[in-house]
Image (tube, rainbow, N blue to C red; front, side, top):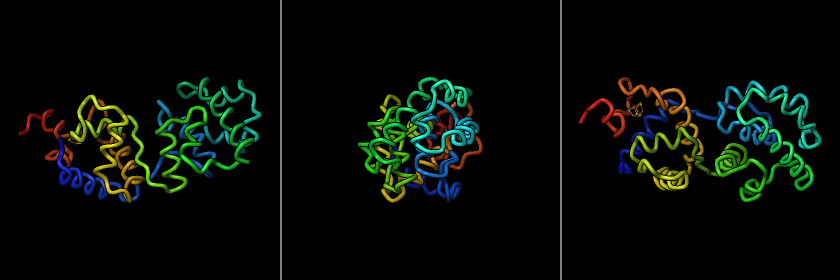
Length: 215
Ligand code: SF4
């Protein structure tokens, strides 16, 4: 496994690459952020950003989205993956937010987790980005990088990845580190073609060294 020192060096390099990393999802309030994150599961942020302006133009508040016609919502977001299920979930979560929380986002993570379509990753992102509560959400990019850097073993679960990253990362940096890892994984250390030959992390990266057969 990677040492804490080496991992912290990786974080330093990433901080230089992405000093002000933040989500690429476009939103104007907490409700829009929550819906956008729910929609982003197994879909790119770019795809989500293409559908949300029209969605929020039609249904600007939890009350309006909660009363929306399912087929209409489906027609507005049908270019993204799993749109049928996501349509049901965002209507239902909008109803709950309107009825139980008076159109405000729940402030507790455990309450966010009870909403339809909201799992650990979504709740952590909302807690971090909206409430600024330290959270280090793990998505496919974050998990891949943690495995490539030997922070965790190849078979580690999402929960194990999250636990280990939170252990090694200063708590004050959890939120920005999540975004830095996503940007690095999305644009540089991609699943299919990581740019190892040009990577400043190569000497710290077990996967890259193995791939390029460097000792
Ligand atoms: S060396 Fe390759 S695998 Fe390792 S972090 Fe860089 S791009 Fe990713």
